[in-house]
Length: 341
Image (cartoon, rainbow, N blue to C red; front, side, top):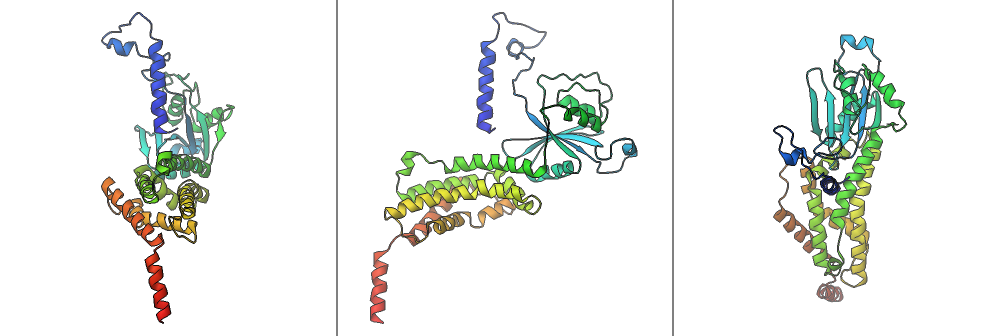
């Protein structure tokens, strides 16, 4: 789900909740009436759909004295959830606190790799849930069950694993497919936005159209979340090649396909003189990239500003088209030189 969809859905629930407010206002203690009367049917101030969690049952990273009493591969459990921007939400119960944080893709892969040493399950959370706060001792298994809204008396990660596995909706997952799905969703979203061109823009002269597309592509390339996904795709190319292929399939390839179509139409209209429109599309995309994208991925410099991106797009288009446009004067001059020789 994209960020825009998230916002639209929230507004939809907000409107629905307001329509269901009873005529008589409720006042609870010192709570402002507008808050007391805006809760949903589950008693929450916000209404959200149930989400899938990636629950990882793993061996320990360090030996503990109690490890001998639990399952050899299920000594700990934590949960993760992908976001629409490529990052991951991590909920990991420690001995000393509950760690809740947002992980960039590269760091998330480290936790997913840890999960692959044990078992990874996709579990739908229960809303509003059937868990209870009176369980007592809150170890990782108890807290994970509470996160998922499960009524459970399991005390060990393996006990929770067996309980969740009995549910029909639970699915096993592997790291590579999780990354393929995440990269596909994130990159496709950004790519479609960057390459969307209106009918009015398509009717513009080729130079202006390429400037618009070039600027859109550069702005998208420099999006921090997409840079992190690109970095992860390169970093994990050997370990998870299908995920890297998914990044290429939904990122550079659609851009090249759109450029090929535009250049082919321009060639048919006599606006450019290209022997190979595909090679021209790749050349133009390479001119846009230059080294600025690699430096941004490797965090070697500052991300270009919007004005710098605009200047780079205009410069790339000028160099590309000035070298691709038919130049009758140059052709005639070349012919004179050949005759003179």
